[in-house]
Length: 112
Image (tube, rainbow, N blue to C red; front, side, top):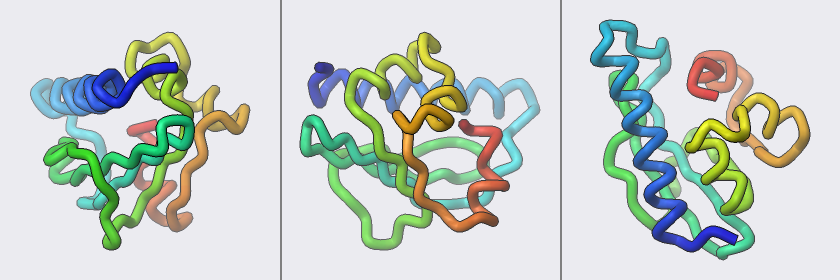
């Protein structure tokens, strides 16, 4: 089981990957949204803001104004961030749960 610092580092790695897409001039077509990531095996919650295709202000704690909530185990989060587990595979197998409106899900699918 990964610890809280490894999970936070994994979220920052995913944010860096998004920043790379934006730097290449190909920002993801995603709306500005607040994202919460729940990690049940640690009892931890992280949140961040998706703005202009970049994930910013990542920190521990929930936000009441979140439009998108991701739920996955700590090891799965690290595996997704490291590229060992494709996010779509995690979602299809039920290891990653996404709670969002259909509209938001369609618009942010490029992030998954």
